[in-house]
Image 1 (cartoon, one colour):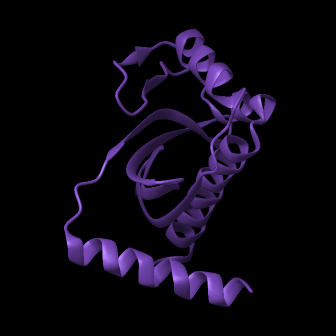
Image 2 (cartoon, one colour):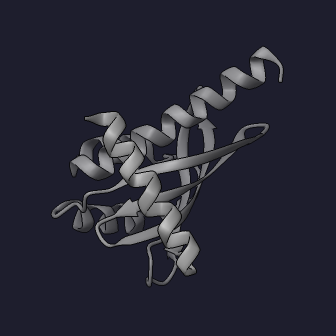
Length: 143
């Protein structure tokens, strides 16, 4: 991987982490800065219909962030497609694991979120055991 590609992916992953920090902290101002200003925003929250347009998307986040869930992201996979970047990750919330797709676009030299979609992940019993073991391992590392 070239240095410029590695740098671009690192910047993209940093923008994705900023999104999840704002989400977990209930920080609407930070969330608003993350979303694109010039491109048409799209969002599909789990179980919701498509939200189209920045005003509708941001209104949904304003409501969600009034009582933000404990959320964190892991297993991020990033791809760059010119001025567009895609991050697929796992969202961990209390009692549920979701898979999310976050599409970013470069606006004025920085990655801005264009589209977020999160949905349920089907798991079999082996997946549940692996997740519990990984969470226990992460807890031991953090303590």
